[in-house]
Length: 215
Image (cartoon, rainbow, N blue to C red; front, top):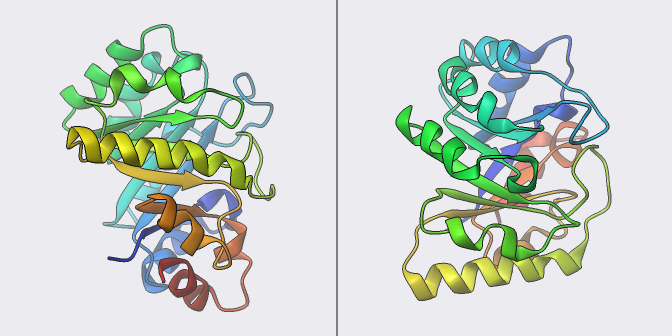
């Protein structure tokens, strides 16, 4: 089974985001990945709930919202209400990880946790029986266009081993520097979903890029 491909709209034309999400579907990709950054947890700032709400009107695909923000428990419910299908956040940025997960679940949406490139796997271990998505960063969260850190696939392998051992069903998503050249490596490590930004949106033929990532 080929991986889910989730192009990141962080690499799209911000002046034409409605078309960008429609293009994602036309290119054969599966999810729309939305990188939300607050300028506090990470140094960059992108967009918030209004953008997710606007995008919802243009697509019936999964809106995969990745919160790179402080105290996500204050906002996860609003992102669910705005139209997110999946809400993922970083546990070390939260004062109430369990509370945030509970809110997302109470909204009938899928919840997930992310391990940043500078964090240990242990920060998510207590919650693996509750999540729908385990997002592994293969770059440091905060900026697009960074090089893929292959050593972070060890987190993917560990997540895949625990998933198999315990019978868990979460998707293992990789975010950071994914492209057709390394997608097979990612899937062999256990990834079931792959985020790609510039590798899709900046490609000469985005549909072929998506196909190359899916393999």
